[in-house]
Image (cartoon, rainbow, N blue to C red; front, side, top):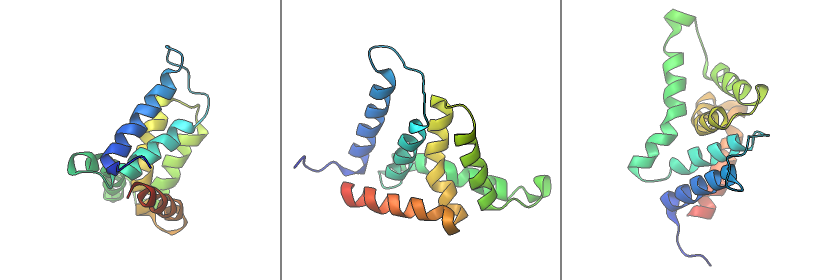
Length: 135
């Protein structure tokens, strides 16, 4: 119907839609809900299937998780599930903010996948749906 987008094309369209929505009416609107987190999660999921330059975006969460789990001498043992819970807490327990929610959203797919268990189920479902639609 619309032709082939590809992962990189969808990523560009999602980013454009996010900023067009944020801008709304010629002025930047304050963020009232956590919807930016979900936009960021879509960006993180789509970026994982995009070209090599855009795949680095999806590695942010994984690298963050790996860094903290390897710092066991400094902090004690920190498991990937604790990092996932921390990220979700930062995203949803504090006042919505465009930058905070966008960073947490982009990092969420990698962190939740690394945590495995119940944390990875939503990521697996969303990834399957998005990659089925994108191709």
